[in-house]
Length: 101
Image (cartoon, rainbow, N blue to C red; front, top):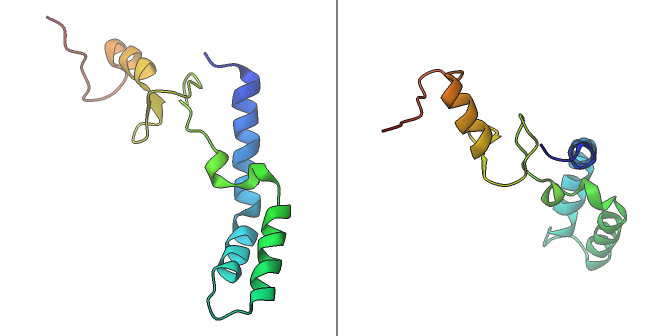
């Protein structure tokens, strides 16, 4: 089980990313627009830099929904390999059986 503080920190980052997503997209569009003047583009970059760092989507970490583990994460199932194996062994995932011989 991951530390609760790390799980909470990641949840806070996810909230900030959702909150600032629209504003960040607008500023990026202005900053990358070839037709806009250099001053407008520069101002957009400055405003983008003033946004909270944790509002950037690259700072999010994929975590297991069951344990909070940050590594060995399956995106399709939203869980780690360890949690997946435990649930498969117990028969709690439909259609998945852990093979043993």
